[in-house]
Length: 410
Image 1 (cartoon, rainbow, N blue to C red):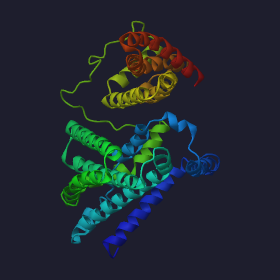
Image 2 (tube, rainbow, N blue to C red; image 1 turned 90 degrees about the horizontal axis):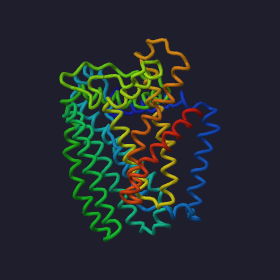
Image 3 (tube, one colour; image 1 turned 180 degrees about the vertical axis):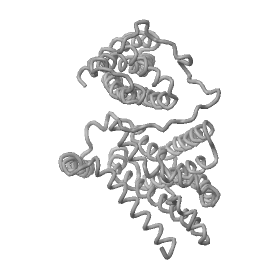
Image 4 (cartoon, helix red, strand yellow; image 1 turned 90 degrees about the vertical axis):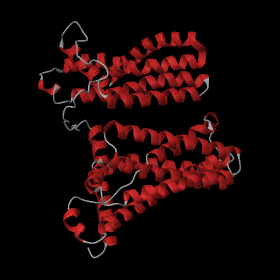
C-alpha cells in the first residue's frame, strides 16, 4: 500500500466482506426470502404507517420505555482499531503509520456511531414527534447527545481494556456505565422539563471528555492489546453464532490461586440418590451457580424483568409475569445445552432418557432461581408484603409447572 488511507480502506473493505460471509452461513437465500425480506418490508411499512396514524398499543407504553432504547445503543458503543499482528514487522518501520491507522479507525468508529444514532432516531421520530409531542429541535439535540455518549462509551471501553485487568476492568466498566446512565437520565429530565439550551450546555460539558480518551488510544504503547481486542471484535459475531449452535468451546483458563466459587465451594452432592438424571441435574445447577459469568448474565435478565413489571399497569403485570416464566425457561435451556455439550459430560455414556429426565428436573430448578425474585418483586410492588409472600409461594408452583410444560414441549 502506498498510503495509510489506502491501507485503512483496504482493511475496512475486507472487514465488511468477512462479516458478510459470516452472516451468509446463517442467512441463506431461503431465510432471506421468507424471513429477512418480509421483516424489513413490514418494518418499512410500519414506519410510514406511524406517520399517518399512531397505533393503539402505544398508549400503554410510557415514554421511559422508548427512552431506554437509545440508552441500550449508547452502552453498546465501541471502537474498532484496524491493526494486525504483522504490522509490527512492517508498519513500525514506516514513520507514524500505526498512529495514523489508529486515528482513521477511531474516526470510522465515530462516524459509524453517528450513522447508527441517526438511523435509530429517524425510525422512532414519528413516535416522539407525533405521539409524545417532542419538538424537532429537542429530538435533534437528543440524537446528538446520544451520539456523544456512545462515542465516549466506546473510547472508554478501549482505554479500560488497555489499562485495567481482571476485576478492576469489570469494576471500571461498571462505573462507566453507571455514570453514563446517570448522565443520560439527568439529560432526559432537562429534555422534557426545561428549554433545549440548558440541555445543550450539558452536552458541551461532557464533550471534552472524549478528547483525552482519543489521545490515549492514539498512542503506540498498546499495540499487542489493540491486536487482541481487534481480533475479539472481528470474531464476536462468529462467537455469537457458534454459541447459538452450541458448538462454541470455551478456552481453558489457568487456575487462579485463592479464587473460589461463590456457592458450592466444596462441591458436595446435592441429591442423596446418585443416578444419572440427578448427576446431570447437579452438574447443570453447579455450572450455573458457580459461574460468575452465568450469574451476572442471569441477574441482569432478572433485574430487567423486574423493571418491566414495575413500569406496567396491574393487568399487564399478570400477563408479563406468566410470559417471563416461559422466557426464563427458554433462557435457562441455553445453560442446560452448554452443560450437556461440555467435554466433561460427553466423557460418560449417557442415554437419551438420562438427558430427558435431567432436563425436566434441572431446567425448572434453575428457572426458579430467577422466577422467584421476580414473583416477590411483583407481589411487593402490587400488593405490599402479604402479596409478596403469597406470590413467592404461588410463583414457585406456577413457575415449576410452566417450566415442566415448556421442557416437555421442546
